[in-house]
Image (tube, rainbow, N blue to C red; front, side, top):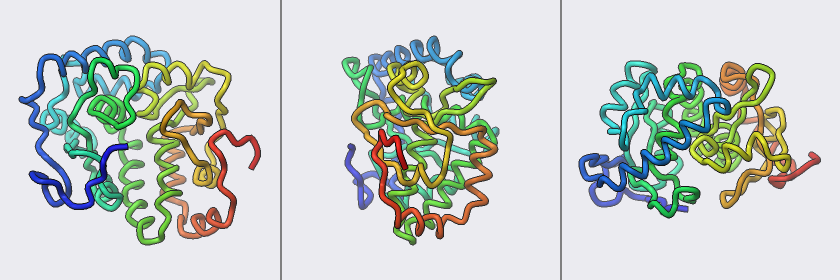
Length: 268
């Protein structure tokens, strides 16, 4: 994993944000983005939730090269009031939640090297922007991510970060959604990965389980391989409703008394 900056690094603001410095990207770096974009744009239309493709078009993310965060944010602000801000690496939980709660999505500004097209453990600008930003143009999903940030600030005080992190992992990063009688992708970790875009829907190995908030909070995850369990939501509206209506404090207390589940657990 990348370095977590407990205090702002040189050149960063108090909230850990930094200038994107878009003009400093090289032609080779823009080419990496274009290569990644082209192959996912070809692969995803029949696999990803249609709202993702709509977001790509609405935000004009199909324009060549790494997106300029200022121009991208201007389009996003007009749609759902969100913006994209650059950070030098992973930021402390409280800062991360504070940004989400205020409709700021933090993104790394570096991009992987050509030999890392198929896998990179630390999230780069392609994962962060291509994977996450299109759905921020969807009003209900945008509200969910803000609600998650607000819940995260409360989780810090309740000592429940690990449980809430699993909710993010199994929805925002690796979630599946029901669509027209089948399943579609929506998690950023899947849609930004060529291999997992196929594996998550087609491979018989992983378990695909109906979303259950308490089970999600009990289930550990791996960061070094494809997921062994995916949770399936019915809709973004339902996910937002559960997030807004649930009193998380007693849920955290209940889940803390239960055994954790392994990523491939078949029994609860």
